[in-house]
Image 1 (cartoon, rainbow, N blue to C red):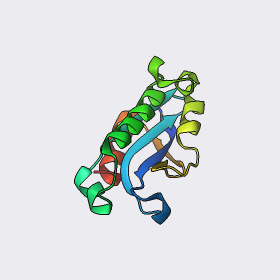
Image 2: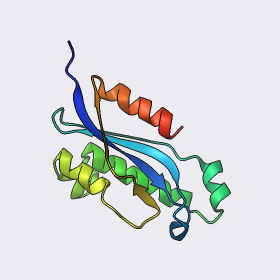
Image 3: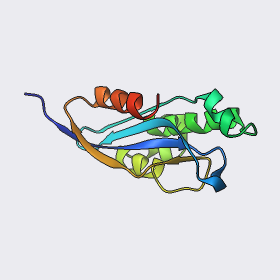
Length: 127
């Protein structure tokens, strides 16, 4: 019998106009402390974003999400935050911020397959 993993996930949100607090779900970050696991999936829907605001800097949004990915994966070029351990990286990525990229509060769950779970959440909440 496979072990069930306790995990936390947060939805990555893009806020085209931060002051309006409207957002579009753009990705998922899933973390399991016991499994020493963290994974991010994201996709920008440019057409949908442009319907909110034509003033968006898509290159900046993509660069910001790319930095989230580097931090999540612990890449050397991800800066000092990417060198932290996995729980600290997840907490930093999901910290409350007032920028055009934010995350939901973390939500818990149980699964026996973390990779399948992040893909399922991505399909349900983002795509």
